[in-house]
Image (cartoon, rainbow, N blue to C red; front, side, top):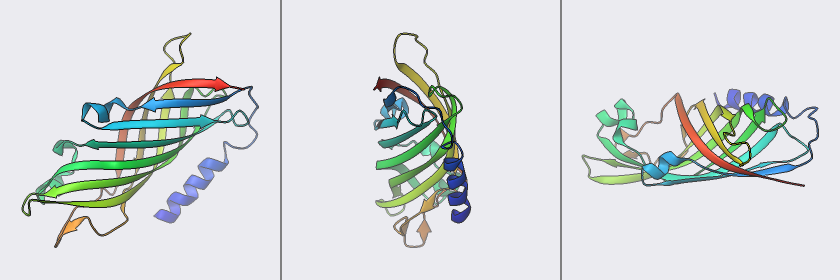
Length: 195
């Protein structure tokens, strides 16, 4: 499965990078995701698009948040897990746009490094563990105002979460990662062009 994901990522990254037109400016953007703030957390991203590759952008994010138990899988709730929290976690993204002006539809791979903590109710204790979430993402960049560089970035991804340590358990009770997962989000961003 991991080999298939890596091959797919290599193909997705390689195709759009070929034969791009040159634009006059590079671009840097700052983004926030309001949802973690609503849940008592945070989410900040910085995105860079070099003028040599006007259909390409790279983004890094840092985020953390409490998650409602309703967002936890039924399987984990039935085992007695609750109070899931994303401790400070990280993600990297590559975006490939259909247009040269870094607007409109885009797609690309991303990888999230989750640092999670969760409580097992029967033990009244928390455990902390790490997982990776490689995924494919698609979204749309929309500038609602003509003279302001504020944009909306709704996106959705799909992937499979992989535990990278064995701390996702108490005794024989495992917190199971989702085999197939998706995330839908709405980022708000501000972009700057420079020579």
